[in-house]
Amino acid sequence: MVRIVLADDHVLVRTGIKAILEQHGGFKVVAEAADGLEAIAMVRKHRPDLLLLDLSMPKLSGLEVARRLAEHMPEQKVAILSAHTEQPFPKQILATGALGYLGKGCEADELVRGVHAILSGQRFISSEIAQAVAVSLIPGGDKSPFDELSPKEMEIAIALLHEPDIKAIAERMNMAYKTVSTHKGRLLRKMGLTSMVGLTKLAMKWGMLPVVDESEDGA
Image: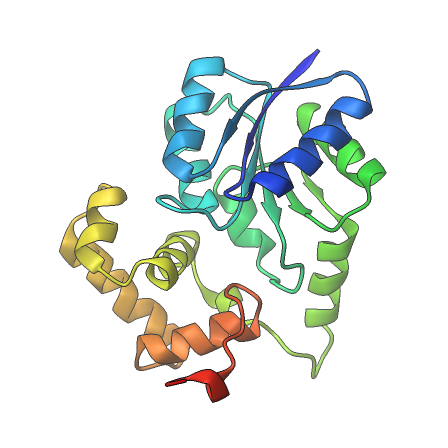
């Protein structure tokens, strides 16, 4: 029986993925987590065969969780889940040590096939994400500015989008305030931005944040 820890801050998503895996047989979700810190705690407690991990979660992003596990528990297999297939930055995902990058909209059979591939030590990117990446590489096609960031810069960018307080981010990620601030300045320059407003707008464009209807501002 393959033992899995499932981490996502949406209960309905966890319920759906759990049902798919357990209905196919051979899989058992031994624990669930609603944020990044809880995901690490559940992995340490249950030592699962696989951690299925949402990309954007409270407290610690999926990237940061994967990075910490790769550093302290390198034998732990991790796969990242994302609701937004238009995000063409799998290199940052895989650079953390994660073996898979799966879209939440993929077919049940592909999810199961991906899990089996990852458990065998192979890297796996679901077809919907692979297609989005291929389109982004077409000459003249849109290329995500987030693809220019290093894995660490991506982690900081995701953290900033959910928590603008640099001091809080530094404490959560066990980094110096100055280091986080330096990463922030560097990633903004790389992306040709001067403020968090610009970063937020790009994050909405590329599906990392829900789009806000500006006509509702001040309503």
